[in-house]
Image (cartoon, rainbow, N blue to C red):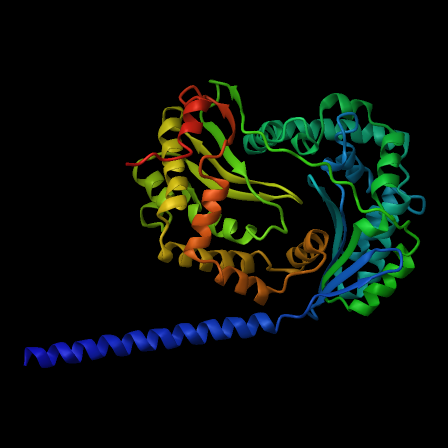
Length: 470
């Protein structure tokens, strides 16, 4: 009788497991079908080299923008900060519109006009009603081609940027990452800050701004991206009308190689309550085949914040240790990519006395990625990575941003179903291999700000980047 009951129980478990597998298969099939049915991203190249890319979802709103392949990496020591300065000047009037006219026109459309500068890209974009896309494209084209760059506006904006720099100085995460780039890419353009040094901001004039535009704002380095209620053929016509006269560049943009240097910078300030620390190794560029496995490894380390709780039940080993042993206030792993290099690492905020313990746990987790990461962990990380990627594409503006960035980086937009397949193809051996390649026995870059007396010296940090076992 006991054997009979056991047999029934086993059959029941097999049945439940089978139902569970069917549900998973249906869920995966449903996701695959959904991803395949997402509107395709259409791309057209104009005669002057400018690329037009869009995804038409038929929404009542749209986001259109100009993605320019130029940022602070395209600057030198003398004009560092000019790309960001130019971003500010773009909204200060053109040959056709005064600043007041421009602001009123955008307000009357009920649209939002914005811009930002990164180390490799400058972006100007507008979010508006679908019917107002032609006007939005015309305004964006006017901004990048006909900015007035008046001396009075330059002087006024100079003080605005200097005030912005003071605000950034109070954001310690920004400060730490600027220091991290400065030490990791010392002596190269990627080591420069986006805002530039104070002395440059005080001296940048109309000539510097004009030279930067004439050098880098070439049609072949610009993408007009659109998402939402945008018809691609109409967007191409608008590009031809408004941007067709942009000068083409016969030569590809020159990319200065940026060497990575294992090194550190510490700014000890015991008046601060918490230590802010970033540790990174050299990662890979956007187009490198190791990028997806490194993203999975990055997701495995994860992120955690004490204010959100749940650390003791978190799947991330480092999050559990942080919660149970009170190691830090928060941490987040990152995988920052550029054209030919990248930074893969972790940023954490902790009490002064916990610097050494937190770093020990971080490096232990890194070594575990290189040697003992399990298949179950990798599967979980892959699912979480796919979820995060889909969540980041919620709205016309994130989709437009994704289109513009990918066209500049890959010269195409990777379809979501292809991206899902590439993530699914990552195995536990792939993760171990990239961890051994990029992390194991590598010299890290370290940036620390605050009461960091208890942070181990660089030689000890370096010696923990490998394990010696008998």
